[in-house]
Image (cartoon, rainbow, N blue to C red; front, side):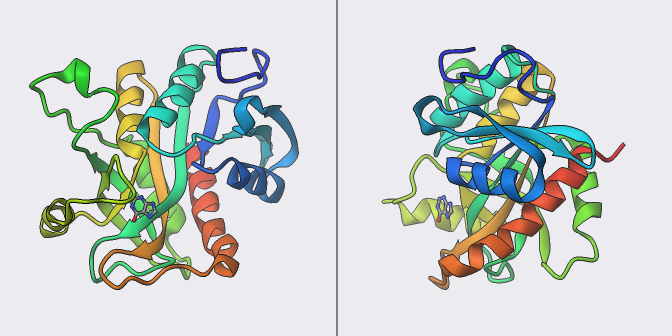
Length: 235
Ligand code: HPA
């Protein structure tokens, strides 16, 4: 047990998928895992462990934003020895060629600040995905009907942004989408020598204003979960 995770030692698998929404953790565990059992419900941040194709997998909610994800990812890495951590979540599309329902595999994650900014001081650290996971995810996405993009994303501190100029700079520099967690996950993985990746579904679009209707969400999010699981267990 840790401060924020009630699971017993051994209840957390070496491979952890991390959606922001605890109810998405429940849905993904019930939909994709065999014999999923609830291993954490501290603060309602649900976590489940089961198997996928015989491999043990935990799906643990991270909450929204980097400070929340940082708590869960730190405890998963240092107290439960999680080795492979894949964020599965939604993002806002930032380029005209990125459509809603598309999947983004995040090679890098740009930030203004993150919970790790304090330790880097004058350094602009470049949080990046694990290359093996990234290339396995690209292969897992190939041949699916869902369009996939690979590139940089922006991990913002705010959902309700008051600085449209920042979004414009991200768009101008080719950033594919905006979310609020991946940069800190990549940074913690680098610090602790673990593998990390973010596989995201575009749920809304900053330029077109389109948003995924709630009834479409499960079907679209399914591809993202399958890509993450296949990538995690590609040798
Ligand atoms: N901004 C930040 N995070 C998000 C968004 C967004 O537009 N959509 C989904 N996650």
